[in-house]
Amino acid sequence: MNDKFGHNKERYNAMNMKIYSAILLIMVLAATVTRGEAHVTSGKITSIAVNDLGNPTGLDGANKRYAVTVSLDSEPDRLLGLSPTSAGQLTDIQKAMIELLKEAFKNEWKVAIRWESPVKTYAPILSVTVAKN
Image (cartoon, rainbow, N blue to C red):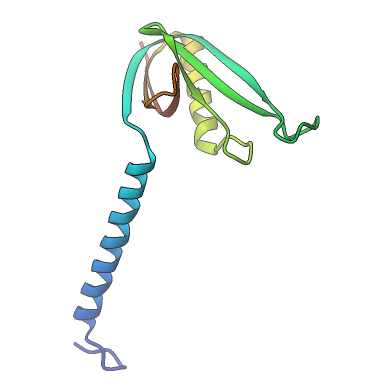
């Protein structure tokens, strides 16, 4: 069936699907290449801390940057953390993960944390799952 311009709709839709599929594949590959290997660790939170990363501009004020680190009873020597973006802000997802971690710590719930391959002993958190006792 043709549209009012004489274009074949089925062929046009098929071409669009191929383009969208190629774009999606490129996005997935880019995400895979830029990320390290993901791991999952489960346990109870033994510590949660807010760390002052200082101010990238060297001036006092609202531009201070903080990171949140967590350690679990199952891996006491590893710090799992959430760091701000390059703009110095935590994302909404990171803020939600922090709230989950705080509740899990307060209530002694078990958590499963998916994290990226670490730089030495610090590993960036990718996701948090909480299991109530």
